[in-house]
Length: 482
Image (cartoon, rainbow, N blue to C red):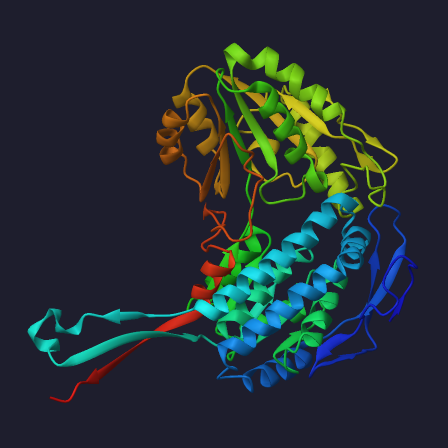
């Protein structure tokens, strides 16, 4: 294992984190820069025995340290990440191909996630039960306390290799749960860097282990371990629902995909809508669960919106993610690039027109706008996870809502309109976990409840909500003398 890129922190961890130390293994994998294809580091790969060892060590930290100690660790970690923000941002950029300005934003969001989790650690409380509300409860006092469920098995994706890892680790620490983490094999460096930072902030040895490896080995070992009662998974719907089906007695929290729709009414501020949707549809080359993918525009405004939107998309800078001006970089690898191009070609064969983009230039898919999408096309009914946005017209709001709901996914959706009062009623009819009004549905603040319905998942992330998933209620009843 070694660091190959001079742009990485020379002390970047590359081993498995076990018992508070980064350990090397004979089996290694190469971490490639998605833009250049060059290997930037090689990291150690673990196996089932490493997972078993990590779980044993994790269980030693139950019951957990007092809440004040856990909060202080999270607060120190937030300060350290903030102080080292450029190191974290460059790591995210190099391993994920995320443009540097977006990687910097992700780093700041990680600081927020740590900070909000520290607040949860200090304020997590139960309830008082009014026992004397019935004759049977007279003379008794009842309280509900929240206790950690146990070891959290965390499995994270490549697209937000720092903040989505933090959304698993920080709430678990706040809840008092030790964690065994499997980061995405293509982007493990940010997770290892955050783990080292948490250790420096005072997290006890063994309370967090990081085991890099494949889903079929390390991932399955975590999911199937009898002493891991909670699985927190972010990734593809088939894998996530497969875990849920395989482990019905565990707490399996799933944050999965989306085919994000936006409705644009004719009375909306079209300039603002076009500008926001152009930026959010192509952030990190569209590799976000809530990247804008489908835009339904009222026919009376379609021509005007089309011109504004295409102009805004064409103004995006495509190129080297390490350039601070770049808006759109590469997708994660050649396999996904080829798949996305095939989906674009399939939509064209089915009648969609490419208003801009649609080609690969210097290995990068150019930001693509397809007009004339319909629910049968993969770019409409499935998750593209690439720099592709489809546009179609509609006549009535009922038609637009039906089109938005036509996907099997339900994470977040958006509405742009001049009638916010009417939009509140329309939002109730959209079958999604979140609906954004006059804002892009790619928006996420890290303290808000974030999660979906239908194939998009079954949980809500955000420290306040994740902590409650990771803890369980215990009722204590006391007989009051006299």
